Image (cartoon, rainbow, N blue to C red; front, top):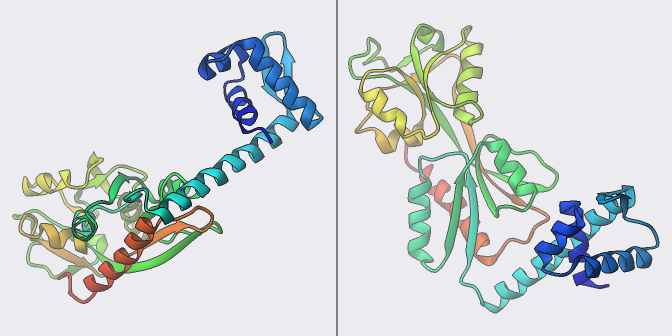
Length: 298
């Protein structure tokens, strides 16, 4: 098995152009062509269809490329495991979240205990987090809603109530709870389509018999706080997020019909290696949310 030969093969397969691949690999095109020809001779079948200067993976090449990629992935995992065992790296964690609220507090408390760990965190909708985990792009995902995949483990962290928050001079201020249908004529503020809170709002409003009148969409949930304070509209807010901002948006109302709750969870891959740092963070996160449940969010 010649790893260099397989690396060159994957580059040609990705670019589907011998000259461009040679430039990327910093070797001459004739040398690259010879190496690919030797690989095909060893495998026993042609891996590419050639039409003049054009080169495309054939059915044999596509299957072979999939297995070669798996080989390199296993090798990379092996290197990560050995470095982790030897303590050659102080630990790094790639994290994707579909919630915001408590994440800064969670990360801050973890880093105070493990200051040498490095994080790379992105904010993505739950379906994207699922795909990133399946592809091995991240170590841990913290999501809204259940993730169901044969390649992933998912553990419930907490079930959280969703409130509607209204401006200071709104006619519903002082109400402890209302049925959702009462809000059918309100102007809603929301995150954009694709994020769990927007999907949650749309689905529950439809259950209540109306489609929400969204007048403002944002990518960052915190931007909505300012708009509420200006009296622009109402919005759905998870209990934990409201608790952290209750001094800014105090007027929350419980929704009684339909019931508005969301389940949070943590997910990781069954197939990809999880470093010691990531394992520590997983257990820390589970304990963190257990502690949160000891205190009411109201």
